[in-house]
Image 1 (tube, rainbow, N blue to C red):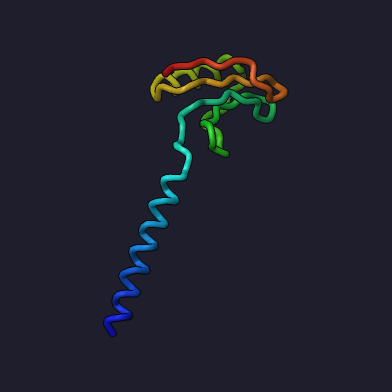
Image 2: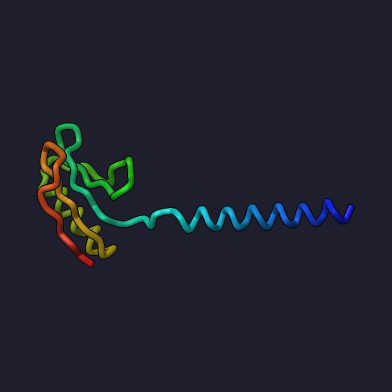
Length: 93
């Protein structure tokens, strides 16, 4: 019986260590805001997110929204062209 208790403690300790190591390897999430073409409009999307933050008819409106969010979180605004390439980057750090 003592051997089983020892193994269960060891197993639990090992699992805790594995979880901690995995969490340390994750990339830190950023608040960089991307202004990207979205359907026939423009969208603001946080870096790493699949979903958009907001949708706008005009690119300049999307840029204003992205700048507000970037200033708040001390991040960058990355502005894309219609073809998806990057046209400009504004730093608020």
